[in-house]
Image (cartoon, rainbow, N blue to C red; front, side, top):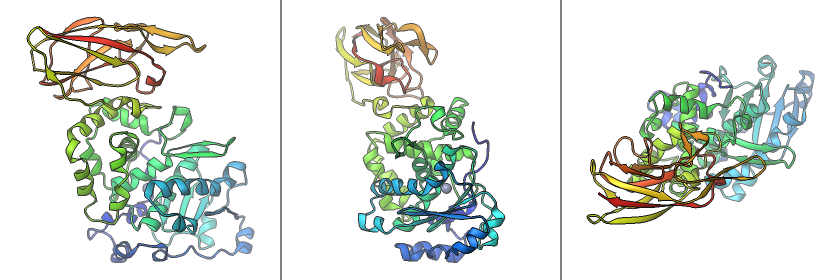
Length: 449
Ligand SMILES: [Zn+2]
């Protein structure tokens, strides 16, 4: 179930962003950001009087890195929430480059709220911005309203706690798109109560793995309606206003794409070093300047094909330039069945047809009992992806508006007229969450005509 247009954070969440200043925010907040480099810059959480809390029906659960204060009934799930922060802390530390000794002493106060009035009466409500919708982060304290599913309650806690981690240990959360994108990315998790393993920043394997979350569906809805956002458009998402759930979905998608993609991950993970700089967006653009066109093409492909379990490692485009064919010449190329678009190494001209023929027998899926589905380049009609037979050989050119997103079916053999000048790319037709089960390759021969 998607969350409609509810916003995730209270508007105060955005005050953690250095970019939030711009004369819009009260001066004290801006001053805080300029100097917020260590624990001491944010106030320590307010004192707790456990006697008064108990009388009011609130209880306290402690773990190494967190103190949970809640009026929610005790359950294994609720009482484990502080432990989730313990399990998340080293993962945040690694992702954001925080040294162990600073991590060791870091603690978070978590208020999980059933009845707001109880927290207000005890002086445990934020002084300003107490009108948040679902969750709020202010330095070492986070407020999380009760949620309908265990998954989404954990998501919201991890989202707000990511803001707190960045604000208190990095000194800022960076511009709105990065701030909210990282909180959404780290909030999107896999938790196994049996093994007590928590993994942050996953692409959920299925809708059931992330109840109430719905980000993938929202991105695909926009993309399918021709309203996909460019990277620059996502970077303009401004969390000084209350964000729609669609905006959270888009910042999640961009940060998730960059964080998981083998070609961009290393550069993207430099971003925590820019959060206290006014030049964050310029730094971002400059590390991706040399292959920005490819990045934009891959982003477009990602948003158009995004699905649960999306396998970015295998979907990553194998970019390689091509050389033109001699008159009447041909080139033979192997295309792996378990990968996305791969260069055929052939430069083509717009409107000048070439001939492509293909052979090979490969595996494109499996029966539930493990028996393989054998396939040839014309594909199989047992199953379809994007309206075409599964496993069918497809072609595209790395240029023009349809590059990689409007493929042409080739099958066993076809003439292909390139819509633009560029390099020829081939792949077999399959969903981006299903490549890992494929085996073998296609041999394609590209001939000049
Ligand atoms: Zn947020």
